Image 1 (tube, rainbow, N blue to C red):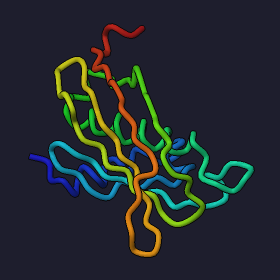
Image 2: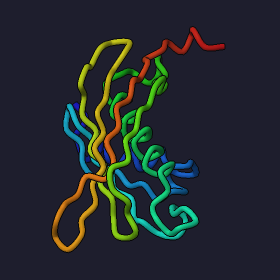
Image 3: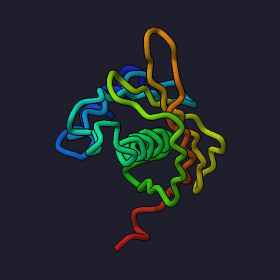
Image 4: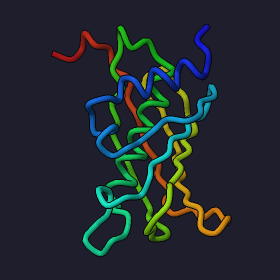
Length: 145
């Protein structure tokens, strides 16, 4: 059985030289039904008005949601594809760190539904700044040419 810390290490390792590393996303915690990642808000993830770019939040959400589904399948035989992502930006973020928490709503063999909540902390208070739902498809590798 793979330990939770090993899964975190594996996810951070396979993220090298990808958009995940470019954005600075780091996986920090995993349980059987949830995954947590963080991202430092810095100039490379801002939009021109110096707030966190909404696309950054959605990329973080799709990353953590897809990776949560990856933990449930045999990756030698299957691919995980995000097929739908719906995001709701609730509060702007200017600085600090954002934390994304992905949890399963439905954990099927071929379709999975994930809820992702993204928070930031200001002066010790936690604020939800984005809420995302995501549908993932688990597809046999031999079906993709």
